[in-house]
View 1: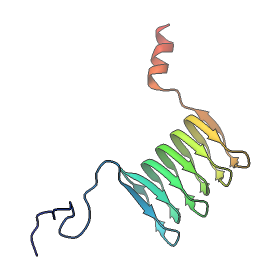
View 2: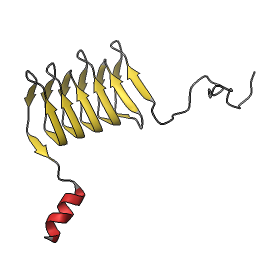
View 3: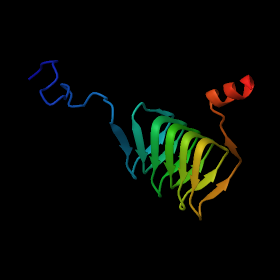
Length: 134
């Protein structure tokens, strides 16, 4: 009962699962976070975040608001963002409203999305090295 060994299903004594590849975290519509978020897992946000976000992959719901910078390998945005965005793969859906500069490797924007800021294509390190060689 009070053992510190994980249960057979992988749960710890406190009932939480250890972080493993393929996991994700969800912030529901009723959640307001004031502070930075750093996640090694994927993150789905339907609530409000007042702070910077760094994660592997971000999915933002339509009713969500983020006031802070976003750094992610991939991001799919459909809510409101007040802050800069840096993502390797970025998808901006038609319901998105973004105020801030956007840096990306690959970009998709649906018709109807609103972005007030500058777009900058990131040059991959290997592309920069190749251009210096030639």
